[in-house]
Every structure is written in C-alpha cells, then in structure tokens.
Image (cartoon, rainbow, N blue to C red; front, top):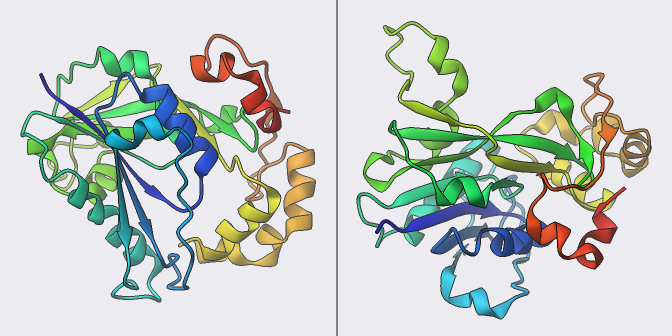
Length: 267
C-alpha cells in the first residue's frame, strides 16, 4: 500500500501546523517540515517549530537549514531553495507513494485524501479560502488552487509541482510546450487559512516576503493591518470585502470538537 508524505515549508505557523497534524493524522504517514535559520531576505531568525502532541513524533521529519541561502538577497530563489530541501525528507519514498506539497496554511480534506485515486500525473486540491480568522470567508479566491499531489515517480521538483501545475494550463493550446495538462482538479479539497496570525506576525511576514512591494508601510504597518482586519478588508488594496460565516460541518472535525482551542481564531 502506498504511503502518503505531506510536505510543507515553515516560518512560524505553529497553530495551523499542529492543527494540520491532528486533522490529517489518519490520512498521512509522514509529515515533512522544512525550516530555515534565515528568512527569505537572508536575515537570521530563530527556529520556531514546536510540536504540541508528542505522539506525532514518529511521523514528523523536521528539516532545519543551518546555512544562509546561496543568494541571500534573492527572495524568490531563497523560497525555492527551501522548498527543494524537502527532498531530504522523502528519500525513502517509493515510486508510487503520494507526495503532497502545500503552503503551511493549506490543509487538504482528509476524507478526500483517504479515497484519492489520481487519474492523471498531478492533482490540485481546490480549497475554500479564509482570511485572518477561521470563519472569515474569502469568496473572491475560492476555490483556491492549494495543495498539490503526485506520485514520487512523477515529482520533478517541488517548484515544478507548485508553480507549473496550474488549473489555467488546462485551457492552453496543446503546443504550449511548458504546460502540464495531466491534472486532476480535486473538488471539496480542504481549506486555505490565510494570514491566521497576530497583527504583529502578519506585519513581520510582509516585511520578509519575496513580494518586496508588500514591505511598504501602506501594507505592513500594524495600525493599517489592524484597521483592515476590523473592517474585513483585503490587505493588498484589491477592493475585497470579506464576510463572517459560522463554523459548521464543512470545517475540519478537529476544529468542531475542540472549541476552546480555536476560540482565539474565530471572529
């Protein structure tokens, strides 16, 4: 039987990552987390990963990049470098094992994952998108092209899996040689909980993001961020106004069964 390897890069998203372990514990065999001692601008940072439930220790492979990135001033290159270090955690994966890759705030639906039968080489989990809090729905970016999946034998690189395997490629002419059309679109594919952090952490992440334009004060100033969250407005001035919804059966069972754990993450 094929094993499932769930791969993410990590900055300091401990609430979501520890929730991820709980949500996916019966669907995933190994969790691969890659963290660096440097942010994507090449600045020194501490190691932030903290495991809450020690019973998951045997499933978790925490990769730490000790050295600075080869090109510290190239944020996009640094992000890709960290991503490819995930290969260190899947060396023992067999050709038909499933490799998942997500941003740390993208969580695949465990029920869908349990019954997954890839018909094509690659899959995209189409996910509901939320922002700031678990129950602030981002209708503008739902469904979100989130978690990617393929068999180990089809994994060229994590960058290829993330960047090149896109829904829009399905509509492009067959003669566009750099497009990958062998894609399953996996509906009801889970959740993307974007910027589910404190105001201070959101500000810090914007200041070290590869999107250097977002480090400007009009985006990263904590007072501006606070105002936008209070008004359920988009951080990036795109004119989006989000809406509060109820936590219901469409959310992960782990959240439904642990209201005290999530109370600080609900509006």
